[in-house]
Image (cartoon, rainbow, N blue to C red; front, top):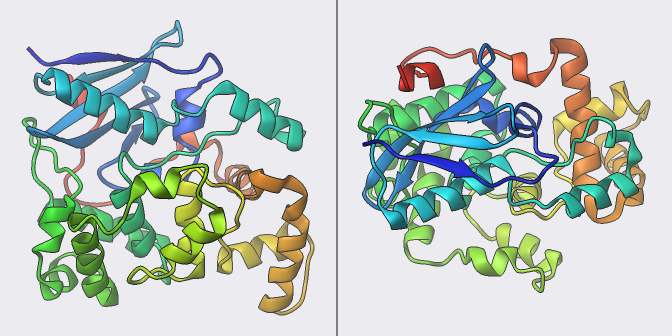
Amino acid sequence: MPTTLTIQSPADYDLARDYCSYGYFLLEPNHWEPETQSAARVLNLADGPAAAAIDQRPSGVLRARFDRALSRPEQTEARTQLARMLGTDIPEAEVRDFHRVDPRWKKSGRGRLCRSPTLFEDIIKTVTSCNVAWPSTITMNRRLCEVMGKKSPSGVFAFPTPKKLARAKPATLRARCRVGYRDGRIVELAKLFVKGHIDEAWLTDPATPSDDVFAFLKTLPGIGPYAAGNIMQLLGRYDRLAIDTESFRHARTVLNMDGTDARLTKQLTAYYDAFGRHRFRSYWFEIWDYYESKKGPASTWEKHTTGATFTASQLNA
């Protein structure tokens, strides 16, 4: 019988707000269903991929319904991955501290950002989001799943594992997954994960200085200052900005700053210094608020893509 898990979450948790809080919720194999306000995705677990439909009951309890039975170890693994992805591992006290520093977001309750179930997926997604328009990022991630990912019992593709991508030929990724110049870098990153070169425990340990984490990330293939800054927040380290062309647009359009990119970088850095270890949170929710002012609440956004997809309702039909 397929497994259903109840997911423990903080009392202030809201699935629609906290899951639909960062662009990766729109990237395969993540799916959000605006009509039912529920999520669905495939997790890579010990015994293979398993697709889950995730919703929040009226009581506030989160529920994940899988398309196969999970062993006890897999259930533990699934809970860990879902907590990372959904942000349920971020305690209320952390969000309250953010609201003390930046009270603008207290009423909305914003404080958590969507991530991937694994650091590996977050890093690959970051690489696919650099120097490219968003529709191409969507395509790259869809093709990576369709070409390199395994299917769950319900026929839905998972994100490729490090082992799978480590064995891939760069030319295959370029031709079939449309990743362009990122082909070799993706393979190199996967090999580093397989070899254990990327120590997530060290990267997330509060005792590890953020400057050391940032410096290490910049040594990885295809990871420059922007990508390293973005991976920092995906590690739960919000004390550093990830500045790119979108940051400059925000500076000019919303914050009324002007000047060269270098000048804007200095102005942005000085502006967000006031928010201390929550810099990225304050920065990102300003940007997200701007997006929602143009497109409506993120939980109403439709994914614009082609090819195979699925929804929570289809998974449990």
